[in-house]
Image 1 (tube, rainbow, N blue to C red):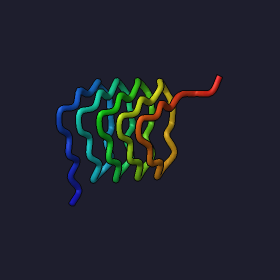
Image 2: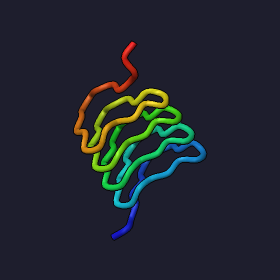
Image 3: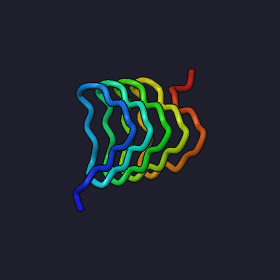
Length: 83
């Protein structure tokens, strides 16, 4: 199956979503890249961020232009550059 499942999600322009990824109740800003085989729920992904393949994110926030490494499993976390 090469399907992408998207429910209750607001998406900005220029986003790409990999095959077999699922998004549920998310906000995805402009230019976000989501790799294949990701499951993302109740999460806000800011502009220009990248979620690499095989990630599972629940109740998370991903900062602008941040890359979440492949196969990350997280709940209730914020991903942003370290200052």
